[in-house]
Amino acid sequence: MKKIIALLSIVLAVFAPVKAQDVSYPAAVGPALTATYPYSMTGQIIFTSGDSDYQGSGVVVFKRSALTAAHNVWDVDGGWSTNVEFNRARHNNTIGTKRFASRLYVFGGYQRAALNYGADSDLSFARDLGGLRFTMPLANGSYAGWKFDLNLLTGDAYNICLGYGADVHSGDEMLFAEPGLSWTKIYRAYYDNTSVSFEGGMSGGPVFAELPSGDWRVVGVIVAGSDEPPAGGIHAITAEGARFIATYLRY
View 1 (cartoon, rainbow, N blue to C red):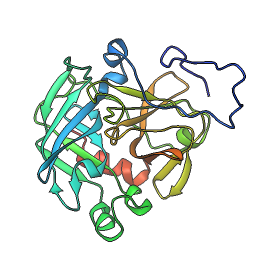
View 2: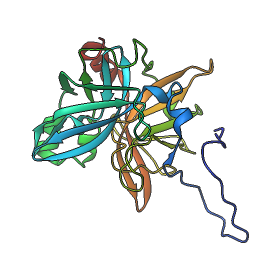
View 3: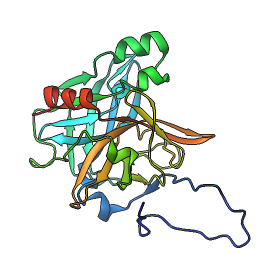
View 4: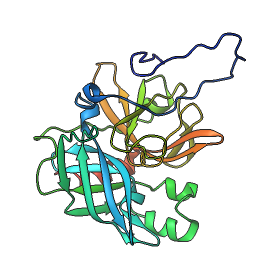
């Protein structure tokens, strides 16, 4: 897979031990890329669940709709999220568009899986897909294309993962991580990758694949991450996920 050298600083350590594989940790993309397509379709989500406020990420997939992770929308303890704010293309105090969601959606079976097996189970991650609908356009009528094609994850297509992290970074600047390996199917729509790591807050952020034409398509959303051992988990857009988007978010 090709590398975007300009996005991430590379440090060469003389006499350092040779690693079996490198891990791509999230790094800020900066204001210029944040405002450039397809990065500009990604947004920070701030929401209330129960008595606390949380942060997640999402991506504009139609004029008035955004795709995200189901656990940003509904939680076993807190129920449905409230005051769901979408800040598209945010870089610190600069925000492309700020909107509050008018409707929330979760993929069928997610709530039951989270209740029965816990939100951090493979069965829940395999259904961890959610959506937000708004009364006004999110990007002046523009949106990111999406595609059901698992070969774009398991083959040689170039992928980038975007979102707003809140562990190491401030949470108000877009982050980028670039897997060096293809994704591995864990269970149904849940895939992971040991060459990439995500921060808390990046959940719901898009996984983009570059097509041979040079166009970009959303092929999954971030749902899980681990530092020890490093790994990133996503909900891949499958046939069922494609129907979910086309049915509830095509507005």
